[in-house]
Length: 445
Image (tube, rainbow, N blue to C red; front, side, top):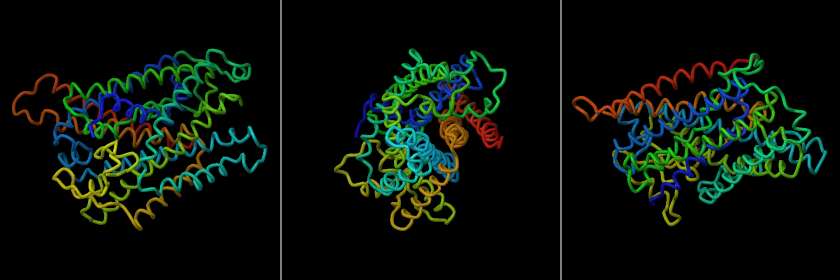
């Protein structure tokens, strides 16, 4: 099914604007206002260039067959496990962050109607949401109906943006009482947080690269001049959104800001509606992270067990980079799975005992981490430093450096050479961010 530029922009924007937007004002805390805006712009520019690289390297495989897997096989087939590991870490971490958001907001929502201590417990709320909503949805093999959740997602993000801006323009007395010191440049004291701990939040905010190849495959034309419009528009819109929420949120609360900004707003009808919208968003979005994580974990197991099958259609609800983002309801997924080519090896559908065991493992691990860790910012920092950095900078940068210009036997044109070495720069930058920021995020103090 051919998709338009508009649908591609909406898909990238929906993928990028998730739970990370709640922590964007907190990311300003060790930077201050002006350096924080600069970091949003710089990380946005790097993310956009990385998406441009994906648009360029997609032409090195047959049209409609671009994927991380197919491009990895062109460079080094053994690197496939690196891609699967990055996807698994990123999707698992995002799922955990969703459950932490549930634990943050559900007690505040329930406090409007009850004072029961049991119902106001974050662990109880996470347990109930996981048991009665998230787990049943995660076991579904077809999640086409959850695609309508994208409208909920966009509406929730838009409502959050309005909520933050309104409370900044017309703050209540309670909010003014909570407001801390606002630093326009680097604060002299950051106490519990430093720039290396919040830098990955900026990287995480733009992570939508795992859907870029899917979007390219759906376009009628894969010419770079056509495809580049999608990330150009999507990242520009995300940039404006993040600057608005980041600046307004930080200016509202100053250094009193926390990892989940919506927790700070007083119990009013508007803030309660906003919390309900965010909980609904993350509750419906968790299964869309579970599916690609499950398939990637299965791939890793196959790698170590020596099996030759490859599952590249990783998600029926949120397809990976090699499957269409919009499925025809009249098309059986097994017909797609049985197709075979040198770029798309015959896939083995994940089902039966493996499907159940891996799904249970993801749900149990997500639950245990979510009830043990209460800091959304900490989880986003770890996920941003590992999975997001790998998908956003390291892998696209490696593809760009290895593939772009490889067809030239003599000197490369200047534009081609710039793209090639930009890929190398992003690859090196990704490695530096990963190791330095992950070390900082894992510090106990």
